[in-house]
Length: 323
Image (tube, rainbow, N blue to C red; front, side, top):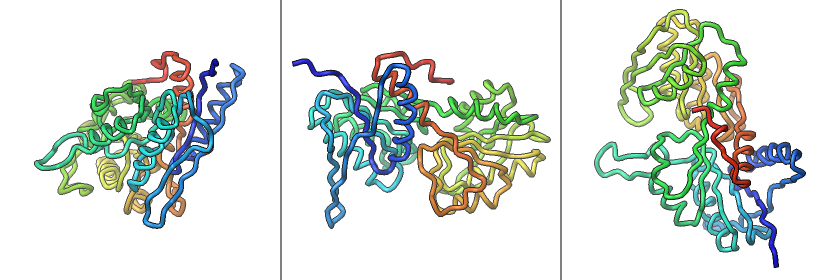
């Protein structure tokens, strides 16, 4: 008996809103081909001790299954993704593709001091052990994490949506800044596309999430500066860089960061800082009770939808990348 090849999309709880918007974008693409997509039904059963069991309500036998989940804290989000992948493989899915808009533990990409784990490699091993066939993710903290996998990794860049958005703002006398030396490559790529100069902020850390000193390298005076980064965690580095640039004569400072982790005092720091606006994507949902007056969300869902459609149909995806 011939079984038609089909796509099934599911979402874990942390990224359900993101997945719903991806499906909306997929249906806009599908209109051209007479295709209709929906978010599959799944559920999570919880036990009183905190253990939980994800399961599929719909059949996935023989299907290419896309599971959408960002693995930001708590760790239950990662565990739910792993269990869902395992459930799909045990339910005879043909392929399982993990769509991870935010890849957690990515900052642990090397041993930067003795006797520490390499968390990003461990997460890669866990995903592979669970049975995933392919990974889709966005703006990894370190590009080399792609090499931690022996399966295909589609590394999507938020520049695909950020650069057109920044161009639409028509900011005069624009300059792009990196908040630290590690972000210089990203800042240079943005500056090249936007045809503007680059400024590098050099920082030293006293300890994790605590910035010591910071200096700026480049022409700051009179510039409307956009700081670009892959994530905002506690916003300590970002707000300190913004205040430093304003002290050095910048006309204004904005920020553009892919993943709004925004833990601890991040929202308060952003609101109290000299930042004019902060642009983030929807790879991580914003906190509902926070003051988000300075924060603008630029959606990545249409980009993910386009790549999901092309991967499923074995079409090239190189046109989806800016750098």
